Length: 268
Image 1 (cartoon, rainbow, N blue to C red):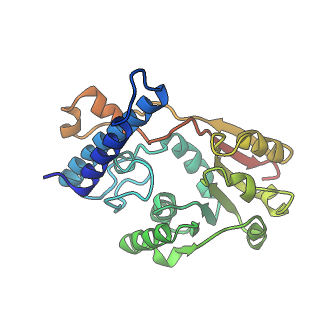
Image 2 (image 1 turned 90 degrees about the vertical axis):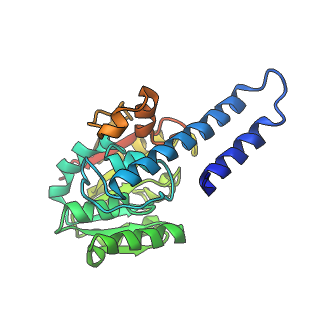
């Protein structure tokens, strides 16, 4: 029997397609393709959960108890441990040098709880403007016994960095274009001493990536990291599916390229 997610996908495809004229715009075809591939991705998620439960299989957070429905983006890529795996070597290099993490745009807590789980001496401050995301993050922290080190809060503004000026901080920002508002060293001088990983969203905020570079090049060494094909060892049941299913299991549902900037203060 079709579940509510499957029925929702079917309804959305129907609404997209029902009034298409001959020679429909490419953007309409693109919308339909995204809906159908998300539906297929969801079926792969359900199969994973049936075989393994909601536990991350590999990568930086292997063994982490996770959720059965992500607040945003692909769940299966997280469960397999390949989600944003391009950042893993940078996190492994930076984390030994920090005593706390500011995760701004924490969603259900993939990084906030994952880093608390992996690095048991580090304190995490997880912020999100969504009440549902904050509740999911709190629940995830409790299920992984790290609630004592994961502090959850709402909106985080530029001036709030000053409270962490005396600490060794890693700042993670994934804010769908609001990185331009949040990361402003003119409003918060403490940022000049902080290690920062920010996902840039030019399609949400024109020139966001260039703005970040311009603001931080005077004080930081900056490395740009882009999404790359994922290398991983699939579970046997996934290895028996189609090549397309293998590709979809690592797809992170991005609409456009959203490079990260890894920014390390030269003073450090």
